[in-house]
Length: 283
Image 1 (tube, rainbow, N blue to C red):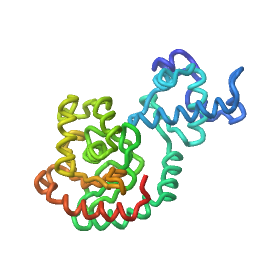
Image 2 (tube, rainbow, N blue to C red; image 1 turned 90 degrees about the horizontal axis):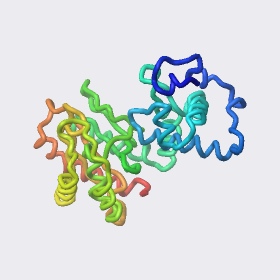
Image 3 (cartoon, one colour; image 1 turned 180 degrees about the vertical axis):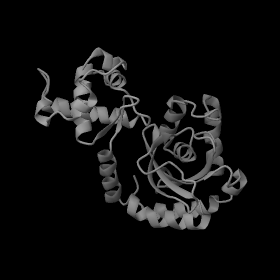
Image 4 (cartoon, rainbow, N blue to C red; image 1 turned 30 degrees about the vertical axis):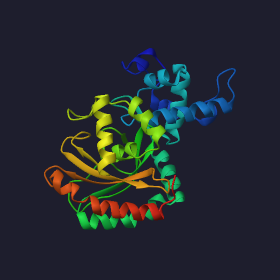
């Protein structure tokens, strides 16, 4: 691995593709490291990549993991070979791979989210003609658990397994607003408020006011804050303690429904959320 590759200059022959083709027995722990250590470090890299929906370079991952670049690069090569990580040659960035998605889907199915929720989501989409999305909170992101697209040709891009921002999405705002008190306060104080569009909320006081508004009205909206040309409305799915363990949304392109028409779907979403609350295993 050359310094040029690490800094994003022309790659040497020691490329990610070469590392991905290295036999497993050649990816050995460095002196003083046990195999358990290396497994833990590899899992740590996967967790870090889970917080980077747009991917990250090997150098960025190395810095965030506080690992030597050579160790990080070697682990990424092994994880890429086995499908846990994907490598994007054009941007020299790593992303979580298809195998992680497959395992996540198995966990979702095991816990009943995907299979149990699907008929309810389909029914909502049949009534609205638009995409219906079910999300849960994963740390400082929301995770799309399931989605049913409408019959229209314009698709919503938040597919199952997608990690998105909490502060710029309707599902994320609903999850923050109806989280446990301690979690909500921590998110209000510490959640990164990075702009995704010019309409994203980036002011801490404004975000707190938005979450209080969501709590008062019982639903959250997104109006081109996460993606230009898209708007959405979401409601919480409550557990028996009155805490949101998921959120349910309808998402549409702005040219198809006004915000008023979208908010008119809240009672339909709330009825579906009550049904989901009764049927889904609660987290």
